Length: 110
Image (cartoon, rainbow, N blue to C red; front, side, top):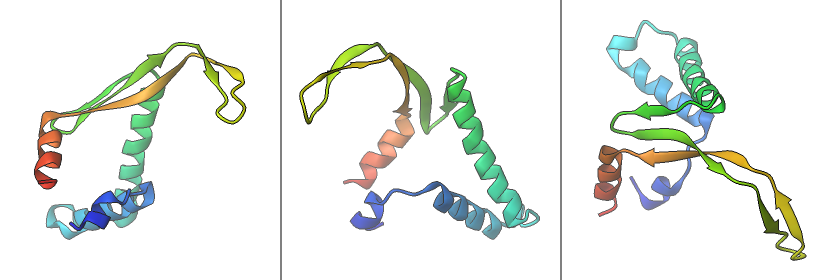
């Protein structure tokens, strides 16, 4: 993988296309239609979003875990004017990579 390809983000539609193409190339999944596989990938992504929105967490062994982090209310500043702005408390999604993912990323960067 070249440096420019590694730094490019994959969009949701590209992810669906890549996963669908790779699964259809595998004879074990050849009986699925591309629309079935596309719907499956979209459903998994939607389910992950719903799980986080309801306050749950997601753990994918070897990859990482998704959870929520609470940020309390605070006073921020408008960067243009310097004016004080009240920022409400909120939950922010966070990702913690698993050990195997960290090792794989570091090995690829050497």
